[in-house]
Length: 525
Image 1: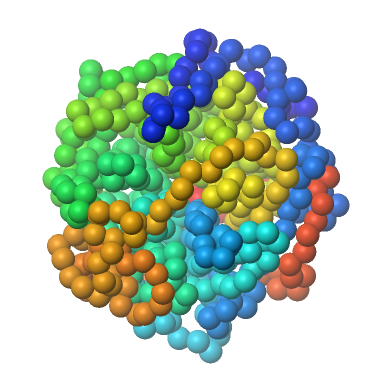
Image 2 (image 1 turned 60 degrees about the horizontal axis):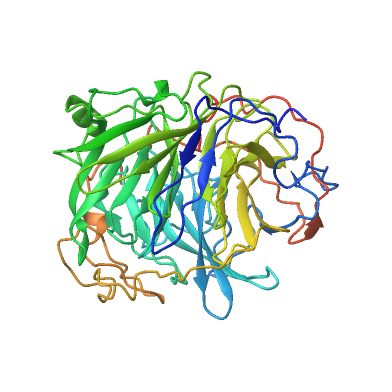
């Protein structure tokens, strides 16, 4: 089977991230192009429903489709992108979900035709935002769903944090280009909480070291940088310094040229103006020698290391996976894997580290798109194939107990829950900031100088470190007019599709050729 090939390296044993709290780090081992036909969960079997092909023993449930009614009177939006799963009350899972929608995207908006944009909208002229799904952990029943953030633009990726879900805008049009903090307990749309300190640029994804509260951020540009935000004080986690990664020995180091196993010493340079009115953050950083990444995409923190995806990096332009081990005075950047050919790995985008230490990668490439796995032996193999269309996968993540994988088929507007014989592991406690000393217990609606706007529209939940209202803290351009960067796909709604169903996957159907014609591979998500 052409997709069960081994990758990538010439070098020997590459060790995974540093151990945290006594947990032993697992090794990634790369042996050059050794075939891995026996790797993984088994060959994919065709799905009789023609939605997603999975290994034997795995099944999926469609959680939502486009325009499904939500509990708050809105409807489930289209273009679901990155997601994060959090523990909820009464054995539930809270799934926070981005929607990469553009300007008044009438084809995929959560608004009914007769509805106006909610007063909590960041920008009533745009349709991007975040929805929240509450799912019964035992049955996967969708218990409730609601809009949390609305009026942002092209909410592509983001990430989990000690304070909730971080949702990032992949644009710098108008008043946009920021990261927003979303309350995982909010049962209705909230006032936006903009994190100005995380910078204004074409954001992709974010993750946070729970010990240091340093945030790491990717940028979706062909000449992007890799950023971190260092808080001045953990009690005020959104006031601090935005910095960009720099190779110690080479200015403007091209990470796309790294060999598998190559380790580069890195430091960080300050970004003097993190919220410029133009798209100049990476230019400021590169003027100080910052390294260049070819379209930074998914990012994930796991066991003391940060895993980073460059979707267009490497000799084939088809993807790279890095591991960053950071410290207060610098650290190392190591290339773990790269695609030598799109048949092996085709533009990985969203990534997540499974709790047992396998990296799951959602593809955004040409033709067939897969969820691939990079295991501890350095093998890349298939876990899922989009049998419905040539749409990219997005939002791949795991429930806190590791028993359920969630993923979106983005341009078909489907959110799926997948279960099967995943490896067992012992889950570690998760927090959402309410037990930390970071100011997360501050009452919403208060004020400080930390750069995050509070929720003032009500709703349950843990309050984030509070500041001023985001709706009045940014550039006042494009408060409802047409912006240049639409981000909508023009797909037609599958309004007649059935509701929730459980399908036993015998996955792997006929390969679908081609891709949407309106973008280059990997350009939408």
